[in-house]
Length: 123
Image (tube, rainbow, N blue to C red):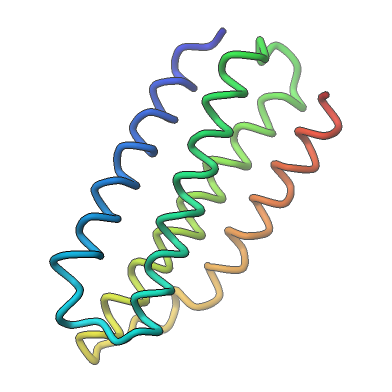
């Protein structure tokens, strides 16, 4: 069991709780309903995939390349997908939308899909 995967999964899971609370309380006054839903989507995907990383950390030895790429895909997907949503929502709420983040979100989604495909392959 690779402990660094469990550590990364724990950090990403804990951050999802922090971001969820931040979105529900601190950002509630500045986000409209659509922005709040988008922010929540980022939080949900981050938490779900952090849990997947925990399961992978407990069930795979990560000794072969496809297992390692599976983990890297999930981590990259979480960061690119969820964090780009956070940036888009917060910058949009402040009327300073960071446009380059827009194409990053689907790229993150693609990495999450690749992670799921590699999980199916490795099972």
